[in-house]
Length: 94
Length: 252
Image 1 (cartoon, helix red, strand yellow):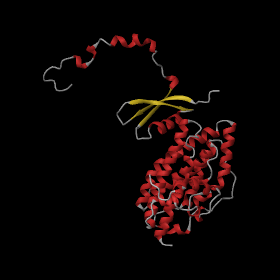
Image 2 (cartoon, one colour):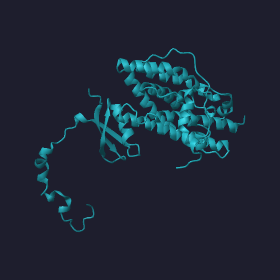
Image 3 (cartoon, one colour):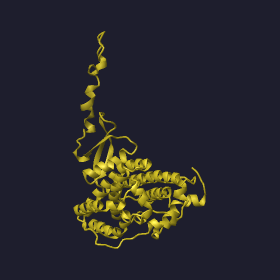
Image 4 (cartoon, chains in turn purple, brown):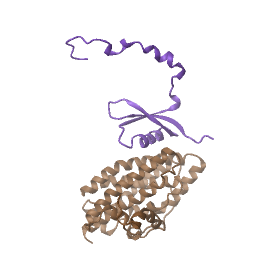
């Protein structure tokens, strides 16, 4: 018998305005418990100002076998980086 | 009794409740029902021990006998402890700890709401910090009551039995002692008896929402204010105080 509770992914925002970043996962039977467990595990040392929890089953992940197809084509497209372009002289705002 | 001494006693009691309650919660360390809950319970323990440290430190100051918070925690005998009996009861099973946490947290939520307005600035300061922690303790205990009370037949029965067993230990929380009266009239201490109606209302609502029946128990245990305890406190202290008893004044 599987005695583990459902798995939830935890996203922590370190301070207001920042992104929520993936911190790890917790086991919980409902969303309240997931929030509380995330609080107790990932924000004990003052790491957080906001928490998102998402049931792991709702996350769709890319397949590692598709990595070549998905990511390799971006290798040689350096013009997609802003640093590729020469800044016009006199431009103050980037 | 002088007012200073009454204030010392009052602060000491606040420290003792937190110290003993915190120690009991810490006994869950590595024994929680699952990893996340293990951490949750030990977090609660740390909140309590932090609070105990703050209140005992202030108590030692009020006492004015050059003792520290550590002296008060580690070098008093059982009969000199004034924690509520409910705090020293063994942790029991998980439902017992949850029921205990609920009864105590609702009380502490009301108590520290009042004490954060105390005319004693130190008590008000510690209480304001504690109130934030206690709100979380209350949410944690309440949500577990819903889950266990409305969970399986086994979890419901265990939770109901735990409340039945603990109910007679709730009376002490609302006792008002003669020595506290001058503190209450000056707005230093809180009139605990005035918290009872609101406590009852909040506990009743949560128990009702958890399908738990309010225990029909009239008899209430008492004694902690005179240092009279259950058989469990002595055993607890022998563990808490072991190091200082075996190696007096040992330091880290």
